[in-house]
Length: 111
Image (tube, rainbow, N blue to C red; front, side, top):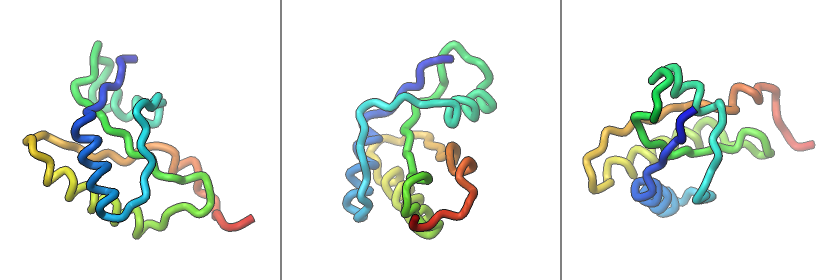
């Protein structure tokens, strides 16, 4: 499996923009991604020697109570869009939804 490369400058711009939009986020300088990202990338790009894109993973809590509401996730998507649109460089950006949400379908609530 090829290494998944990021885009540090765009990632920092998105992080700063989300914070200014009053989202409390966690920033990681290194994240080992798993099949939740690489399987969809393989379906899209096959099995290349190197991925033809750079990736900025955005992890959303789907395990610990309280999970974010659908409206909150939608608002974050809108905030990410604003961040991408205000980035200085003209980049081709795709946003993919993937990962652990499909593993946590049971009702969640306080214990």
